[in-house]
Length: 353
Image (tube, rainbow, N blue to C red; front, top):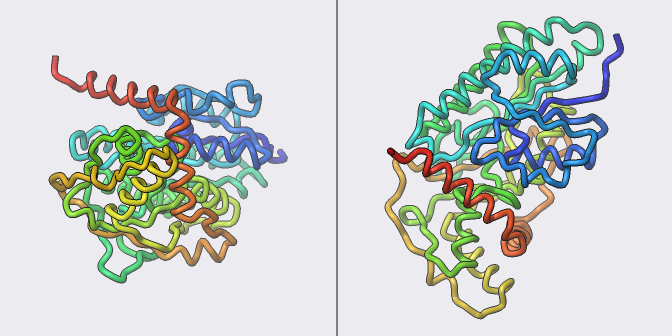
């Protein structure tokens, strides 16, 4: 049977990176998208509203832990690839709710791998040969980088937060399914992402929303923790590059190649907000140091050389990307209000009665 070039299955496609990938895919690729998302507090329909009438986008509300649903979607749509982005991702919340992260990021990943493997084993010819399972990991699985160190595709996993540990467990499962069953897998470990439609609990949108509202910008510890910031559009291009050209069984690291301290990024955001709003306020004075979070990694840095060898490179500088992101949050208050309300309802649901 000839392989359909009809669909890919993207999990978590209503989230920040997943939603960006879905929109980018439909704009630049031929295959349709089956989008499986649980629509948790971080999966917002408003992020996909422009795709509501797109016949190539099918949004399925469901859980990756639901083996029967996953099996049904694979059988019905026969995707040529599974791009697994669904995850609980916020480090602070993982410290408060580690079992929730284990459920989604470990059990959910295992369930998806199991069903994808069973589906792949039933394929033949080109369909079987070309099938891929792509796992979205993170640079946080490697722990904290020493000064001058850059993680590589051969760096050992040394996760420090419950979130990072749950993603590292997912990586181990991906490796195990590839080794045991021969499932053709690839993994990508990007650095910290930023850009439009990122939930306000995350560092950069939290800083932006505080700055444009003239509220204190809470900075953990001394604020000198270093991160390599990658614009979400560049990350999604990296995902597509790895899917198209990556070698099965490998992991690829994606980053801009430059690290910045959290304080430096907060200061950039303050200056950009003042310029965009045009009110002349010195927002750097709003930066407020707060107690550091437990187990806070000091530095992340990666070697993206193998991914560059596939033809990928980041296209957006931090200065340009931050300026556009600040402008987006200023100009899209309706989306922000929806996201803030989603966070509020989630926190109320967790509160003891």
